[in-house]
Each structure stands twice: as C-alpha cells, then as structure tokens.
Length: 420
Image (cartoon, rainbow, N blue to C red; front, side, top):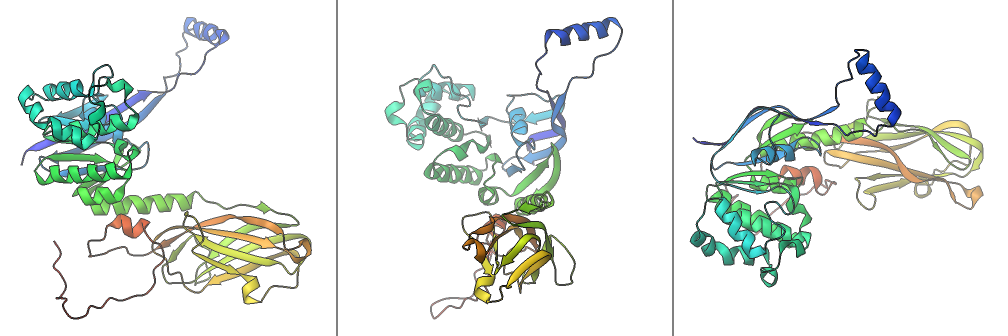
C-alpha cells in the first residue's frame, strides 16, 4: 500500500525566549569572551524528539496529547510551514491544510481570489476550481462577503473559508488542526461530516483535536504524543483510552492536599482510605471509600456539622453527605481529632473525582468554620472495555454515575444487531 505521509526520526527544537540584557550584562559577557570563558549554551525547547510514523494512503489518522506535546508542530512540518531540525519527512499528493485561522489565506485578496489562488497552488485548473466554487462558498456560508478582502473577515469567517477551501478542492491528504474548535457548534458538526465523507472517498486524513469523540468517530488509528515523543501508536479507541487514563492519573498525582485554616477550626490533613484500611488515592468502582478529615479545634466547637461532597469538576455535586441529616453530630469538638465519612460503595465510572468539604458550627450561628472547598482528588479505576459502539471518550468523560440497569424490548424487535 502507498505511504501518504512518513516521519522518520524527526526532531524539532526552537530557541528559548530571549531575556532582557542590561549594559552591564553585555560588558560582563564581553569580558568573559576576552578571558576565554565560553558562554553557556543557548536555551532550546524540544518540540519533537525522534518521532517516527507512517500514514498509509486513504488512512484516517489522529495525533492526540496534551497541549505542548508536539501535535501542531508535526502538522506544520508535514505542510512545510516549518522544517525539522533533524530527520526526514515525506508527503505524497496534494495537501489541503487548516493549521490555524487564516491558513493559506492572503489578507489583501478577496475570498473569491483566495479560492482561485489556493486551487492553482494545488495544481488545479481554473475550470476545476470553478466547478467547486459554489460548493465551497455555500459550505463556508460567506456568500455576501465573497468579494470583500479577507482582512475584513471575522476570525470565524476566515476559519470557515479556510476549511471549506482545504476540504473541497480534492486534496490527497487533508491536515486539520484544533482550529475548527473556535467555530460554532453547527460549523464543527459540518466539518466532522465533511471529513468523514473525504475518508469514505479514500482521502488521507491527519486530524489533531482535543475533541476525543470526534477522533474516535473519524479515525481508525491514532498516535499519542507526550513531551514530543510517541507514547502510543495503535487503534484510535485505545489511544484515547490511554490518553484519558494518563490525564486522570497525572491530575491526581499532583494533588497533595494540604492544611486548611478556618475560623476556630483547621483541617490539618485529609486521608482517603480503602476497604482494607490502607490510605490510597485510587479506588475501585462499586467498592467503599472512607474520607478521613483530621482537624484541630482552636476552641471548643459546639454541635459541628461536617459536610462532604463528591464532584467531577462540573457544576454541582454528584453526592453529598452531611452529619446534620444522619443525626450523629457530636456535641462538642476540642483539641485534635478526626472525622470519618464512609461511602459504602462508589457507583462511579473510572476517572478523576474531587472530594469537597465544609464545617459549620452552632455557636457561630451555623456560619462556616471551614468554607466549602476542594479538599482532595481521588481516582476511580476499573477495567474500561465496552464491546458496543459507544466511544471510549464517552465512557471516560460522559455521565459519571453508574446506576444498575437493564434493557428489554417488546414485540416487533428482532435479536441483537451485528456490530460492524
């Protein structure tokens, strides 16, 4: 099979930021040179570090990873916007690219002139461009402004025109970066549909996006980049799974908790304890977890009310537990101690979660002694494997609470459908 895009041991480094140098710095630098002292090597930033992969013609391929992983740099090198510091890159066929807003657009030319120019750069004749002109303008939705200079377009209009031109002039290889995310929801949907149509036609797609549902929907294969290196290369579903699990694990690993000073009461430490009595930050779905808050009362606290909540980073708590409802509020707190709240089982899907808490006291008019705030992060882990068409991104980023359920169908429904 023909290789459309090939990266072989590609390295890309950039010079670091230049710091302000005063006159005394220049004088000292000159004195060191006269003395034969070598200056320190210039700071460099490594964007790609030995990246190698091949994309076959007609393959739908994605690059995913955190910001700064090297995804956009790889696309810029593939489009010859940038060149590797070391290594070899080859691309076969006409390339349509949308790397950022305004890519390939000349600001002084009109939209009509830019469409013609882009087509000629791709090697198409004027007649070939003319046949696709109406379709390009209609997809971009800029007909009233087509004869205005592109510099007068909004960023959204430039984006729509850039993508429409790149995706409709029959590119052999289409390279699309996260730029489409700045468009409205309707335009993003049309972009995904257009890219899917190109893949069905046998075009090669290289897609960079943080929209992992779109990555799974469009791409068969994906590479996970981390710090400029290839961390995983395989099916898009598995790459998305690995990426999300890494993100959750890294987020929890960076959370060390800490002391929280309140009004007469301080939280000195928060521990999360599993069913075996061991302190941990990882818990199994459906198993118990105990949140233990160590406190220090600076004065006697009458009838304190402890409240814990589990959140997933979105608005509102998934679950809240408070001593005021259970009726087991202690009459008074003095000195140092701890309060335990045991969640009997966690009906949560695997990902990172937040433990929030607050403490109120009767002697302060039930005002907050410790304000409602995040106390710790923890992670629910379990085997994530769905044989259905549901995407891995949906399983790991969608609705977090797992409620036991079952499905039945009445008359008129045949047996289970075969998976494609």
